[in-house]
Length: 237
Length: 288
Ligand code: HEM
Image (cartoon, rainbow over the protein chains, first blue to last red):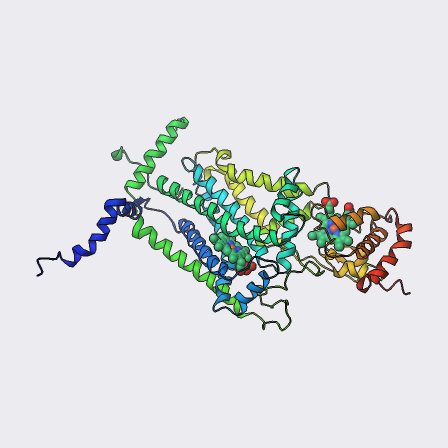
C-alpha cells in the first residue's frame, strides 16, 4: 500500500512545486531572502523596514476604524466617540492609529537623516531619495486629511486655518482651497472629500511609491556605511 | 590621487559595491533579525502610547457633545465641532508646528505669502532635488563640509520652529470694559491677535495694538476672511460682526499712538450693535 503513495514529504512539496512551475514565485522569494547585503550594514539601516511595519499597522487599524466611522458632519464625531468609549478595544485601535501617525513622522525624519548621513542619495541611488521625498510629503498629506476626520473643535478649526493657508498662494491657491473644501466653508462634501483622500487616494499612491522605493532598494542594494573598511583588493580585480 | 572623470568614478563605485556584495552576508537571517527587533520595538512603543493615552482618560462625559478629558497625551476627543461655537484652538498636529510658526513670523499681510507658500515650496524643491544639488561624490562626512553644515542646520531650524510653534497663544491680561472687548477676548479672535485693550496675546495674525484698522476693513475681514484670517459670517450674526468691527476700529492702533481712522463716528454708532447683539458683546461701559 505504501508503494502507491509518494512519501509525505513529497506530497507536502507538491503545491509548492505547482506554484513555482507556474509563477516562479519561490525562486523570487529565495532571491529576496538570500541575496547578499554588505557585511558591515548597521542598526541605523533598520529604520526603513520599521516604516513598512508602521505603514502596514496604519492600513490595518485604518481599515478597522473605517468599519465604524461615518464621514458625515452630523455623525462623524459620534462614531469617533463610539469607537473610543464603547467599541471593544476601539480605544486601542484608534490610539494605535493616532500615535502610529506621530511615530511614523518621527521615523521618517530619522530614516531621512540616516540616508543623508550615509550619503546614500548619491549615484546610483538618486531616484530612491526622490521617491522617498515624495512619500514624506504624501504622509504629511495623510495627517492633514486625517486630522479633520475626528471632527472635534480643534480638528475643525485647524483645518480651516490650514485650508486658508493654501488659499494664500497666488492664482492656484484660491482654486486649491475651493477644491479641498468644496465651497467656501467646511460642509458634508468637505468631510467626504477628505475621507476619500485620506483612505483611498493618498494611501494608494503611497503604497505604489513604497513599492517603487523597495524595488529600487533591492535592485541597487543598500549602501555600506561611509566608514566601511572594506576595499577592493588587487586579488579581486 | 588623480582626478577621476564621472564615468571612471561610477565604474569605480560599481566595482567596489560588487566586491562588498560578494563578500557580504545573506539578507536572511542577518538583516531580517535586526529589522524584526526594531519593528517589534516600534510596535511596542505605539501600543504603549495608546495604552498610556487611554489610561489617563477621564470619565465619559454626561453632557452630549462634550469633550472627554485626558492626561499628558491629550484628551480622548474634544467637544463636537460646531461652527457656532466661539471657543476654539486652531492648533495643528505637533509635526506641523514648524509650518505654523512660519506663519507667525511672517504674519503681516504683505509677508504672509513668504511663510505660507514661498518658504515651504523652496523646502520641498530642495528636499526632492537634493541629490542634484549635492554633487560631491564622497560619502565620508569629513569630506562633505557643506552637507555636514546643512545636516546640522536643518534639524536645529526645524526643532526651534517646532519649539516656538508649540507655545500656546492666548489671553495675558484683563479685557477692558468697552463694548465688544469681552467678546473679542473670549472668542476666537484672541487665539490669533495681540490686542492690548482686550488683553490678548495671540500671534498668528497682525497685532491690533500696533495696526490701526478702519471699520469697513474690519467688517469686511471678519465677514469674509482673508489669507490666514477665517471668515466668521457662519459664526456671528450681523450685529455681532458690526460690534466687533466697531470695537476694533475704535481701539486698534493704540501702540502707534493713533486711533482707528473712523474712530469718532464708529464710537458713536457701534455700541448700538453691541447692545443689540447682547451677551458678552454688550460690555459694561455702555451701562456706566
Ligand atoms: C490606508 C491607510 C489608512 C486608513 C484606511 C486610514 C483611515 C482612517 C480613519 C477611518 C480615521 C478616522 C478615525 C480616527 O480619527 O481615529 C483616520 C484618522 C487619522 N489618520 Fe488615518 N488611515 C490610514 C493611514 C494613515 C497614515 C499613514 C497616517 C499618517 C502617518 C494617518 C493619520 C491619521 C491621523 C493623524 C488621524 C486622526 C487620528 C486621531 O486624532 O484620532 N492615517 N484614519
